[in-house]
Amino acid sequence: MAAQRLNEFERIRRFFAPLAAPGALGLSDDAALIDGPDGQQYVLTADAIVEGVHFLSDDPPAQVAQKLLRVNLSDLAAKGAVPVGYLLVTALPRARDEAWLESFAAGLAADQASFGIGLLGGDSTATDGPATLSVTAIGRVASGRAVLRSGARPGDDVYVSGTLGDAALGLRALRGELPGIAAETRDFLAGRYRLPQPRLALGQRLPGIAHAMMDISDGLVADLGHIAEASGVGAVIEAALLPLSPAARSVIAADPLRLSAALGGGDDYELLFTAAAEVGTALTALADELDLPLTRIGRTEAGSGVEVLDDRGATLAVPVAGYRHF
Image 1 (cartoon, rainbow, N blue to C red):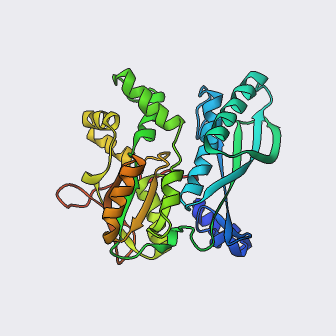
Image 2: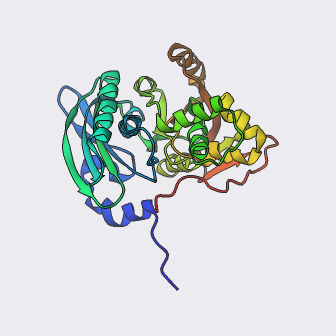
C-alpha cells in the first residue's frame, strides 16, 4: 500500500517549521513579525498563484496582477498592518508575449496607486510549465499590536466581513458550471473571483478589538479551523447567519447544495475574526463608518474543531471544508 501523502500543513510542520526564525511564529500563521525602529514591527507575508490553479489562462493579465497583489495585501490586513511595499517573482512560459506583460504591469501600477505602495525588487525567469507568480508583501504595525490566529478565547463571537461564497461561485460560473444564470449575476461573481478586495481599512482598526484574525483564502470552515487549532478552542458556525450577496443568494436558491461555496469555497479574502461579545456595539458602529458589513456568524467554545449548525440547530455536514493544496 502506498504511503499517504502529507498535506500542506503536515509538510510545513515536518520539513520547514524546524527552520523557522524567532519572528516566524513557528510558521503557524500567515505572516512573520520582525522588530523595527520607533516601536514598530515589520510584517512579512508571501503568496503565490499558479495559472490553471488560482487563475484561468484567459483571465485578463491586469486582473491577474491585481489578484496576485491583493491576496498578499489581504494577509497584511489580517494582521492589522499598513502596507509598505512588495517583492515580485515571475516564472512565465517562454511564449508569453510582451503585450501580456504590458497589461500585467499596468494592473500592478493601478493597484500601487490605489494602495499607496511600490515595487521593491524581485526576480523573473522562464518556465516550460504554467505561469507561476509570487509576491512577498511587507507592512508595518505597532509593536505587540498585530492580530494573530492564536488569540481566540472560549465565548468569543465569530465575525466575517463582506459576503461569502461569491468567489467560489464566480469560478464555477467562469468554468460554465452554473448554466442559466443571469449575465449580471455571472459578471458580479466572476469579478469577486478575479478581483478580491483586501480589507485594509478594517484590519487596521481591529487591533485591540479582535482577539484572533485571518483572511478567508481556503474556505470559511477550514480557515476558522486554523484559528481554532492555533488558539486551542472549538468553534460553531450558524449557517443561517452566513452573509450572502444577492447574486450568491439567487444562485444558491436554485440549488441549496451550492451553500457549500460559502462554507468551503476559497478566494473570498474577507476577514474572519473573533471578539468578545461586549464589543458588538462598537463593531456595528465600525461597519457603518466603513460601509462594510460585519456579520456575527457563530461563536468559540471550549473544545476543538469546527461545527456547522443548520437553522434547526442540527449539525450540518460540509462535504469540502476548504481548498487543499496537496
